[in-house]
Image (cartoon, rainbow, N blue to C red; front, side):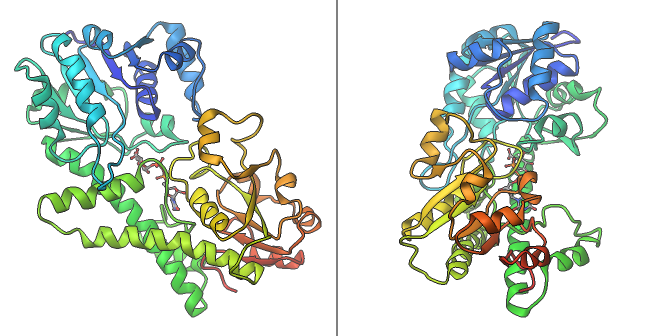
Length: 436
Ligand code: UGA
């Protein structure tokens, strides 16, 4: 392997595309491959299939400098690269475990064509022991498999890549881990080198801990409502303790997205399959499920009836969080689903779902009347429910809300609005853990 290894990326979803483009941005030569021919065609023209801040710019930069290339499939990637990043999906199986079929298929495809001495980097989130599984599928003594978990957040993935809190590389062969770590030489961060199983565990433990923080604050918010305290003040009070910190203590409708739900279940499953009942994590998941139901009850309370037949609910926000167009496992869609089951008609607006909906959006949003503006969504709603923390909802025009809604209630599941200002505008307000 030369001093400047060629990097391959298999799978150009959120993680693969961000990783490939960022590695090219910091000076590496990167070949990215995906089975989706249409996606590759679009990327070759600099078209980015997802909403992700800063990604379009660095993909265009990589294409124009010649350091970033897109090819169809995994074989060419493996043939041309010294270090191959596997960034394929690991969806959740019915029993809560991670489905490794994409990882196994990609490993089987690249195995026979990998360059001698190549390193395969497992970037997908996988159960402990998958480094060994990939090694067994590839079956070549001249190839080393390394675990290298990612900690990128959707919406800030480029920034997270370029300014990471740490880089973790795990391998049973330390020199292979050091070669992967060396790719980040130009980035000022701490590098943690571990064995493969520890690196795999770090990923699940990090996501599990973050989900636990959010479930904890959501439980505290429920307690605040019961005892008459305000969660905003409580979070300020506990978050200023450096041992606790302020991050990931924003109450809301529960955590969602493509990672926390699947990884939390996988963590429980991995532990159970090794004989440990991770009851704390089961509790974290249970609080999250309950939180979505609590939001539904808030809406019922706001309109004064449990039966929502004939009610129109105006919803602001569909994505699982702001800054992304990702609808996967969105708490907003879970809450909307329950409201519809209870008979409500839902009119919704989201800044990433305007114009003609894509096929992916259509599949997630069927049955929801998607509007082109906040005003249209608010028009004649019995209650306004804020479900995603898009900045534009923070400056909601309350006079217009009052004029357009047929009801007068706002349920703010992201605590974006000031309760007193809302009440002063003649509307009722219910947030999460705020003083009544
Ligand atoms: C998460 C992790 O934050 C990343 O470090 C990790 O790399 C990624 O999963 C992954 O495994 O790939 P992401 O799913 O993009 O990133 O989203 P987060 O920003 O972590 O938010 C997850 C959910 O928690 C969202 O529904 C969000 O609204 C919610 N959340 C977050 C809260 O309700 N309160 C908070 O204080 C923070």
